[in-house]
Length: 154
Image (tube, rainbow, N blue to C red):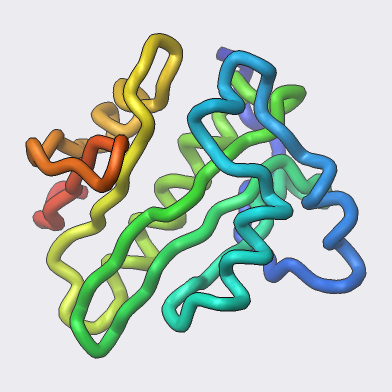
């Protein structure tokens, strides 16, 4: 893996950067695992608990993340996550997930972070497991559910 030289940050999606974020996409083999950024952003406008951001490496947009943040029920989920095909393998995804985990840990009553993923060869399960996410045995439609339970270590 190439060393990350640019600082990774999560920035609001705005009129100024929307088109750049919509152009980001995963490689052809990964497209069955994650919805397009256009679909995610559209969906977010109709979901009360959606929180979404562009993932930047320095001044360059490299990905997209969307969370469901339900503070009233202390229910937090990683809903969408992607790094553009031209920016994968540089450590940006790892840094971005660390920022997501850090954000959710600070939310009221946060004890866990859930996510669901489409199983299959080349899928994201191993990536998430490297951060301590564990299979719950639950399914969300055709997707498997994983959970990161917060401890002092993560």
